[in-house]
Length: 261
Length: 304
Image (cartoon, rainbow over all chains, first blue to last red):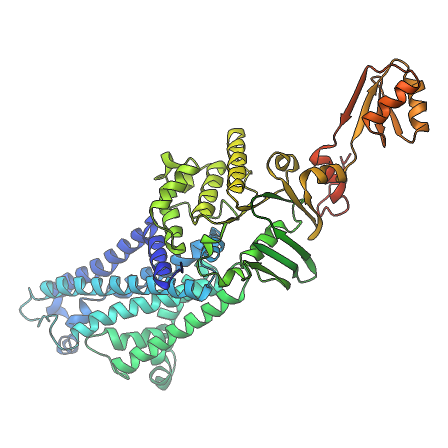
């Protein structure tokens, strides 16, 4: 008999779903992603008339109904960290690697499980937040609410799945590389928010030519239905994929090169 | 089955394992003895491909562990019973391992039954005692029904009933033709369980022999003699080449002459004997004798 990749993937999925924390964090991510978006839509629908004229002219109905996902993203990234960091804190990684000595396969299986789980969460949160949000926005006759079939919307929903998967995987890789949950959570939050914050103090060309290619901006090209200025979803998606691949390759090197995982 | 050849592991300037060579025999419980820090766990980690040897090799049926197509069907291991995630139940913990190792799900309930954890199968591992952790670890090792078992200090934390259970289990597993390697720093525990011993100290192999031979070779036993004419007997025995110590309670401890020879000498000199008892040194003494000078952490005060 030979153990196959599908066995390892199934085992990693069993591991992830058999810990209550996974579901606590997933539900928290849903509350933040959908709840905040819904609240924001409620307020916007009521207060639309008081918005500055230029905001009304260029009103981003899709973006308004998805604001919460930007924060939910942090919690989904934490899920990626937890999927591996508890194995280091409990020393269970030794058991994992004794059961499956092919370390590359262990990393790949964990990544597939974390990535797919985060993708599903992201897409589901996006569809839920969007649908409820548009219904609420539509109660105001001045607002042109959108439907899932409108241009860019469906791509944006999958884009959010991809963005959550990407950050969960970057955070996951960080946890394998640093073997520290706190370290990799801090690193990931910095990677999500720092470029935008620091960018505000930098010359415009740095923002357009360099910071656009950082993971968060690249992901935005993919996940925003109302795409902001930039290289567009295809290049944005490819760049994001590149970041994830880089993170996973570093994690693999680290996992394979060291004693006892 | 398992061949360890010239296995060496260095961490910087510290040598944890130095040129270890041995074969694990099927059908026998082998005790892996050594003081704390002697290199037992490091050796086991290298057998399982967790730590890379600095030099030397370990093969299982001619292959390195990492190249086995279904590792837990070949080698079952218990490394550190506490190194598990407490949030899972015993059953879900064994389920992921079964899945990862290509073992059918039904086997999970079988091994839970073997180790006596069926009644707590759905309890979170965090609520387990150390003894229950050990039982869960043994269940893990048995999942793949492997011909080779490596158990690192499985006796730790077991209650007397558990120790007895484990002893019987290990002997039964060996009787089925499996190779069973059990590490321990508690020597007397091994005397009851192992048929063969590997002794290491400071990473070096000190002994690789059947346990009876080990006990005899490691420390010489003595013969206790009680006789009414003690002083006279003492002189006779010394002349015959025995090392004689007089005990305060009125007995002699004789080293270098066996009980038969002492009895014959007493008869020859017509000295009556009230007691003639061979005293075996025991595994503990044999072990201390053998590993003297190779103990890494030695207390200098209060040492006898």
